[in-house]
Image (cartoon, rainbow, N blue to C red; front, side, top):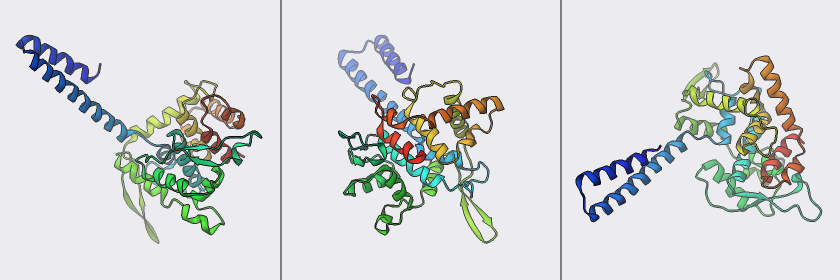
Length: 290
């Protein structure tokens, strides 16, 4: 039962007890609808504050809880976060792959097309969306991962690089109350770090990933939640998935890794051709595993 139901009941009781006339009844009904709408909006705002994007979830997995920074040896997370951005745009219906055509071109050779330029409300996503919109001729998913990461030899494409992505995502997580901001001294320089502030959010994230490959395993990628499927793939591509499985006992760890390998060994072309499949999702997976 939600709070709106309670409002309905209280208004109706007050009407019967006080013997209100029909005008009062209409007025109360209108107020009731307004109150319900207001509370629904509040609920929506609350959920938006705690809801994390794929980029934020992958970064949160990679950040050291107390130190507040990612491993200096991790050179995969940068491109992994760009892959998350493309998948977010695909899931939100902003971009799509061009048609396979009569010759059934593969995922890697098909171009990423703008579907709609309606803003997402997320600065990083909208910045990437703007680049896709302004690019003619279109580029492949693999190319976009390289361009957004700044990993290209073409100087004309460097303007597509999304800069300071990790820092910007960390600030988003600070605003959502998940991280906090601190300064740490590393002998020769000071560095801004973002240690964990809300352990509950990260614990839930880790538990959600563990459950997806253990207690809630469905053995069919088409039946898996698209965001969870993307999170597992991109966390692996970003070399941070191990952090979610580290707390598991040996037996569960072995099962979890076995099932992740099953996902990685899928025929992405076949999966992308199935009904209701999101082709952008599988094209990004292909870009990281080919």
